[in-house]
Image (cartoon, rainbow, N blue to C red; front, top):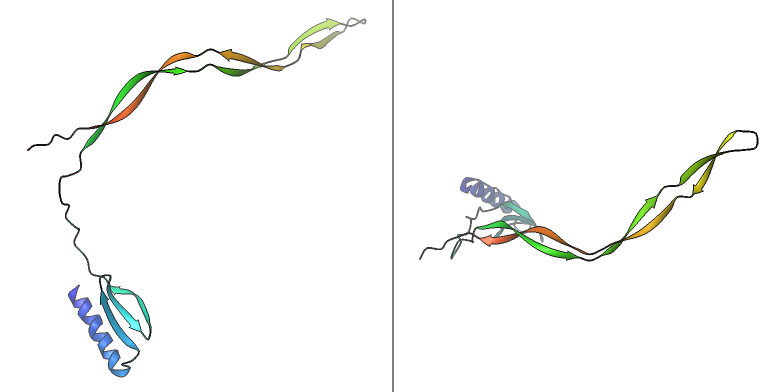
Length: 131
């Protein structure tokens, strides 16, 4: 990493001898950037920062436990499809004819309220702290 950084700096400084006002190198917290005129480009070489260390306690380990509870469900209307009823009869010539006794329809049926057992999962801390 240092060799690449040194190579880039030397290459840019070599260019700056021929054109001192147009080429520059900017080093900031994002890395090393090459500047040409007034416009600085994206970082050429970025420094690898070590991962920051955590301070304090480690986060608690959690687990989920099932909890069953009785819940009241209110009554509601349910739409039920009732198919058509068909029948047969005979005409004056003795031929069998199909006819509709009652047409298809939708009936609203009341479903009364009831108790239902539901299971949900609750977050529980499982970490034991030693002091």
